Image (cartoon, rainbow, N blue to C red; front, side, top):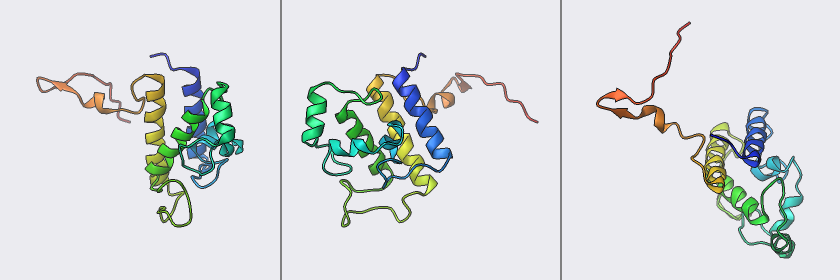
Length: 153
């Protein structure tokens, strides 16, 4: 499978952020979109509320002009962030009275968020989810469809 460049770059950035403990859903430069956009927080001006799908005036202008930020339109970026926040356990848009997880940077919460983001990014590209491992468990006539060489050390 040929992975589109914008997806590949986004996956590498998200992978590194996760493993370097640089992923924080409550920080606009360290959230999913913040990491995809090289840890810049200027994208937060695309909407008036963090986690909202409603473009601000600035966001609508950029969207109408066809602007792309590391390959993604303003509306795509807002969708990515919404997917991430909700999968991490937040109620969006973020505000002091909406539900949020007890520990927002818990690795399990972040992993859930990233899995949902990767699924959404693949959907944007029109390809199968690269994290879908269900195929390795497929079987036919009680035999696995795919064979793996298992090496025990």
